Image (cartoon, rainbow, N blue to C red; front, side, top):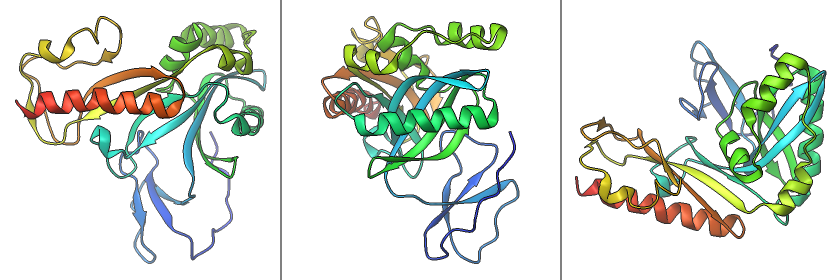
Length: 259
């Protein structure tokens, strides 16, 4: 994918330095005026607002949006910091409605401009209801499984159909958002180094219900700042969903603190 030329931002605005070959916020930090940009990195203007993303499937220059999410970035409740990706909340109708149409238009424009094919994700910052794209991910994204859970859609199925047959699904995201609850996922990071013991005490019913994934094996050594597992939750609105994600993450942190 070509890198478009961007105008030089306001020299007074804060900027970030980001590795070109990275993901999940790894290696992203503040850039100080006059410091050297590391090889393989670039500078991007910092935009204040709500981190969000839209996932889509593209073919023939057209886009079908599959989900609109808020992103959890650097959240200490999950052991995150800085610009580290910590999860997503897939919002339902009644929340972020003012963002939906501009985000859909943005996805369509980028799909046409870059000839995106298959499932893709666009990371955005939303300010005053206006989404600004900061990154295009022409690949499977972490929020795809939330789309599958909420809407019963096979992300791999629509991806394969778009890539093989240039076929797009008959899917109406606006209608789907009215019928589905708000659901979310959060990556739980270790706050200190730990050797995992028996995890049965904190698996409980969560794993059987599909609310706990990526569980480490007993004996696994996890360094501070590295992921432990992924928790899932749903709720009536993003605030309730977020509160439940935090509660479930706290149970994991309490359990590994005793190891």
